[in-house]
Amino acid sequence: MEGRARGGDLEILSWLLMAGREIDRDPAAYEGGVPFLETSEELPSATEVFRILRNMGERGLLERFPALVTARAKAWSFERPNDADVYAPPDHGDVLTV
Image: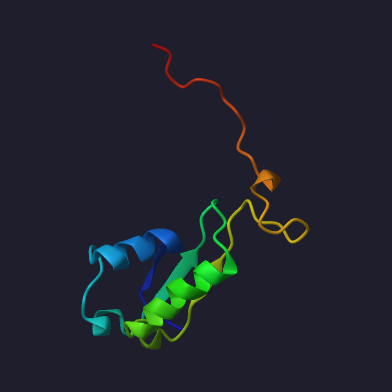
């Protein structure tokens, strides 16, 4: 499979789509591309992810892609799904003290 890779955070993509910014209005511009999508550490629900993907499909975007690569947030765990406490970045204290 070959195609131009595009991607990033699914929630950010949905905001850009809602605002009509940074996204080409002509779905044909994405013909043959391969999107890489991941959810954020905010762990959106399966329903929210479904709605975002459904809306992309309604815009005719998904039918342009021969494949879709997805990833889950680092905070997600099979043992404790949707529990952001599984991954907590280390506390490095104050970055700037004034």
